[in-house]
Length: 279
Image (cartoon, rainbow, N blue to C red):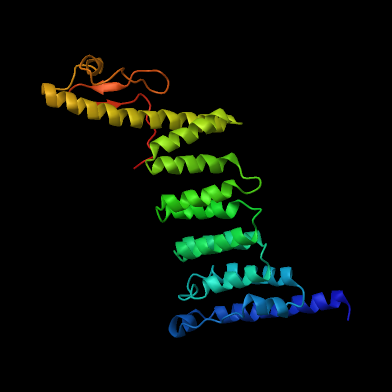
């Protein structure tokens, strides 16, 4: 039997399997009442049963999975979600789209962020030449889990991958700023600014340097203003009085060399420009 005939028979069999699975999946009430799922063999077994057509088998299962997880009236469709995408990626470990789309389904549909991250970590292990998996994992760690340290670790890994864009370095510096590690963030953004290869990098660095300097200066100034008030029972009329009172060597300026805005009634410091990244 020729190779073309074998491929034709395989495609027909896969198509028939897909058709019968579709008819089975359509029994929504049956799923809802019985809570039944047709489990797949392991990826290792499926790879053997594919008779060398690994990519085609992975393609067919991937297409089926997208169709199945778009059937929203099936109440237990997430029961074997992880095992299905593990099976597909065991058959074809370098199937990039499966990791990305699978992680979307896990995070956005199943609401299981840890499962999504596990699949992306598997992609990172199987495709060490790709930065996207660690980058996507950092997004979920930051946005959904609010775990800044973990997100930064993913970004550090992503930045070491071949072809990693400057965006990753900017994201890492921003998350360190969000952690309130202002000194380290300032150092990183200075480095990004000095080595910028695009206007976007320079603009992002400028905005962060402006905001970070303001936050550091504000914290110090408001501390000294409270000391002044404890001694004189009032806030100074202007910031230069802190210098004359011996509390400050010189009044700090913002990143552009302009004066900060100061309210002598409340003792509050503000900047001409504000970037509200923190909530």
